[in-house]
Image (cartoon, rainbow, N blue to C red; front, top):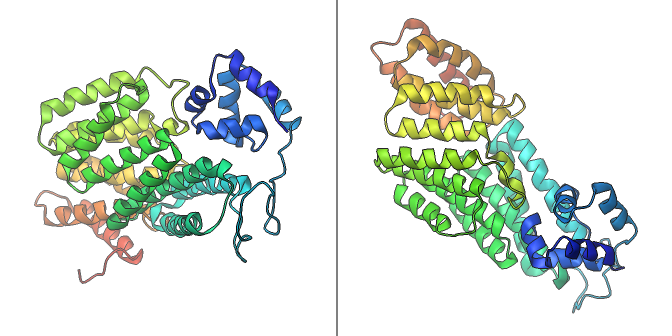
Length: 401
């Protein structure tokens, strides 16, 4: 059943289907499916959709309830009649329909929560297995062409997240492969907003691998576009600043970061993608600290990292672990021994509760610096030895390494 009132509300707000899609962060085909009754907006998209077209969320829910989905809400044993399928869905396969797309979005959110609590070592394996399954299905299982863009967009978003989780797990060869595949899927879907997020991840990963020229080119490629919101431009200016700092262009790195921080203060716009929520005070602080660390201003980096740890929500466990590990690293390089005991105390509980190879690798590189230092106190050395023992018990390296 079509939803003419939804279409009228869109037109009254001055939006074409294409423009509404851009503001809500979906494909134009998704908007067409909403208005034709072939699909419903996912729950997390509804508040933004209502706000953009100028109606209450209650009114939007009423419009959706009064116009149920057309035949197509099918289960594993049925196939909608409006799909040109040569063969039925293979035995054992879930049909790729709107319910499947919604289930992918739900599982993506669950993986995000898993990462926040337990880190990428655990969640990356789950995500990669799911992404491989989805990727195979796209090539083998028939689906309604009307949901193609949404299906590829959801698969690409899963790939983007999988790449990020693999980065935290230290699987760097897989990161590059998965990111590139996610980029292909998102471009086929016409999902520009998640494509931009993937490019941001790729720039971050290139910087981590000490490939500043590659990181700089990726960030500059996006910045050359004229339609970026202040928040997105700030994000890619931060990536550019990190690449400049890694490349030794210290003054330009600082200037670029200051420009990014100024744009960040402009706030979020209605046309910002849904993922823009994580570009927050904590994220800005952490990148500023990393830039000062890259250019050798360790003491300034320490102050900002301390603020960053304090800003990180208590339930963002993996984030607190990574940020506290970064603080320990900065304090060690600056030989700030008077401040480091408290950092050890805050860090220890995470080592055997959170699986983050990224954080563990940082700590494994920091401990030998403490062991070799002529100025570290006995208490600092003892704490470093205990941290090393816990890392060994967690399985990160052998005692004879």
